[in-house]
Amino acid sequence: MDRTLKNMELLSSSKSSLAKFLRIQRSISTLPALVVYSVVGLYFTGLNFFHLNYLLGALALYLLGVAVNGYNNLFDIEEDKLATSSGIVKANYLLKEFTWSQLKWNFVLTSITLACVLFLIGNLEFAVLCAFSYALGIVYTRPIRLKNRPLIGTLSNTYGFSILPVLSCFFLLNGELTATIAFILATFLPTFACCLIAEIADQEIDRKIGTRTTACWLGTRVKTVIKAVLILSVALYFVAIYVHWAVILVTPFIAVILYEIYKLYMDFTDKKADYILLKIGANISKVLVIYVIVAIILHETAATLLTNIFNA
Image (cartoon, rainbow, N blue to C red; front, top):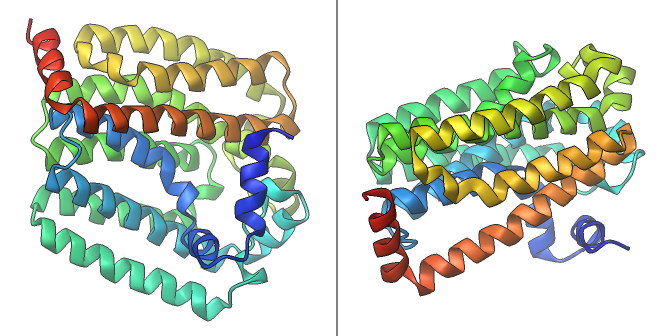
């Protein structure tokens, strides 16, 4: 069995306290935003992994993601019941091991903790950005339910996983505007493709419960859209490189995403979308670990090298 699936099954079935905590927090769902934040933030801090605001900002983004996912858990119970019967990958139905009250208190306490962290950071622009994103995450589920609106729902997710973490680095770490624009240009379409793949994996369930996602709306045209996104992602990447060379730092992550999406396009089935999404997450995680190790061990050397490259 593939190690990625094996690890997912272990996380989903483990009875340990840590595994249960990660499940109620929906921690895996926060990973894409944290990856983008980590890489962009490391550039803006000169590869100083232990920069206080950098670490606090990562914690704030994590809590923000947990709160938004927690709110989604409270109001998508029926959808998650159907997901449970579709396999280990889609089994987000948390009421099988947590009570509704536990889910509610997880959401409330996470939101309060987020507010405390934002107060501790003391950056007004970053706090406003998080407040806007928090409100967007709430209306994504209810009362407006953006997730049930084709394209808008997918773009909302794309914002949360790519634009939000880049803007967070810009406001929190006094980042360069041109580099910020370049990072957004490079990551936006690959992230959009990942969000679309997640919807493809859930098409059968979404149709049963009447959720009209972008993938459902596109129907048989979704493969054509994936091809277009692949081509445009490459084109936009070179535009981003032209805007600012710092984009080379996210190149390994973009390459992983585009390669796996290409594999899905060449052998397209709804069932394989789940697997591709897991492979993207697993491979990106491995690359991120390497980045963090380099940042910690070779901080001064790597920072000097980056400074010489980008200021040449």
